[in-house]
Length: 312
Image (cartoon, rainbow, N blue to C red; front, side, top):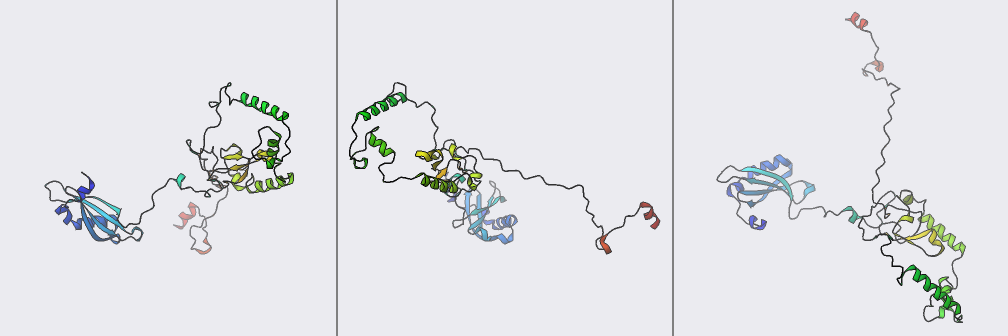
């Protein structure tokens, strides 16, 4: 039988009339100052009813004291079942509990915080294991790719150099041609970064997201071993990459390979908190404690047992 059908029943008369018994039980459990007026009674089953009393606690607005009474079949004695505090229809309730891993938002992580990654994290996948390697005779194998590159380079050497600049080509230049090499080297742009420009940019990035930052000092590992690191191209690839972890404070930023944070992909085990140093007890010095501080001087003269006997 459903709960709705049970609650639609008429409450047992003897249990419903035992308001004083229910009130006494509520006062005994919560105190007289916490129990308010009687709000009603509902039937929970055969000869089982629940009386509701208003809760006068300011921190539990809309809550009700619920006292359940029952009696045995053919018995006139009503007994107490339980007394609990339950939320009413207009009660103030805490928001639904959300796991900490889902409550975390980008920007919440600080120095020393650790965000372990789950074993089945959808953002990560195993590295190269060899299982997906193509067979040696496949058209996409390394040997076939190397042979194809050799043929393309040979064809590029026999081709005539076009007088049209690479930027004016209607289609991307063929792989291995002089135009493609020029495009790869950045010759389609009027100017490129000088060595000085690269160094100044590297200094700025290392200062903001480098090994000397508080976040990196407290990190479990550096970015060079993190799966969320996207390496840069060119010479800066040896020292910098782009962070792709949305929970990291460096998400979308250029970071040094020696940088790190608590969102490292391999931070699967929470570190143990540091133990405080044991207390230092100095047992070489004795502090005098007066027995009668109310006396003059606050000190007590030592007496021998013989002197005590002489005064008796």
